Image: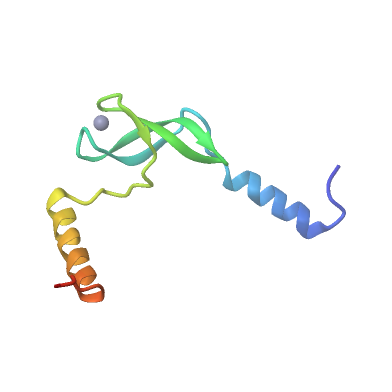
Amino acid sequence: MWPRNGAGRGYYILTVLMSELRLGDELDDYCVKCRRLTNHLVVSLMDGAAAKVRCRSCYGDHDYRHEQIPPSKRELAKRKELFNAILSEVNPPDKP
Ligand SMILES: [Zn+2]
């Protein structure tokens, strides 16, 4: 049964159309092993979104990263430095 509210029905159809992602669908994601954006297959879904994907180049499974390229080690070190600098400013080390 469709909901009586017409807007509700439209919303339902829209939701179905928007969540077309299925297992085995292809999408681009960043692969840590290949160190680049590669073609991936959806191997696990959560709430209509990709949860786990498999790289089509190295066949490695990993969580879907939403095409986010993880920061390099150099970048992480830089961030840590900045974080420590802010920490020491906010909370200066006690000198007895
Ligand atoms: Zn790969």
